Length: 121
Image 1 (cartoon, helix red, strand yellow):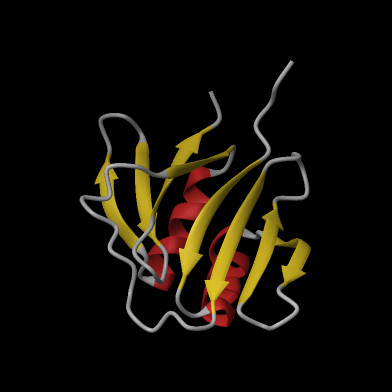
Image 2 (spheres, one colour):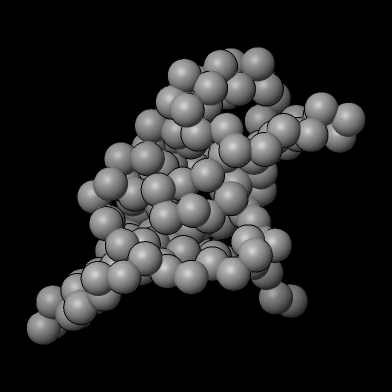
């Protein structure tokens, strides 16, 4: 058997990203790895419910924003309270695309990664 463990996003400003993921999605650090020479830092975020983790990778020498291409990929999170999360995301100004026909919407993190919010079905 094989199962999902984590997904990675490279981030330019780790503290800004940690604040975003906590405020926007309630994701908090569950594990961290720091290079002995300080050249990188990996912070794994969890939702407190599942074993799946989002790995945020920060590289000390990186100064340019990441090229995300056409951003035709995304991470999706499920909720049983779309209205509350939608209100939070609208107040934060992070909703970047809405698909009312499918009942989903997307938010964008500080580095431009898209995150789909889907209702529990």
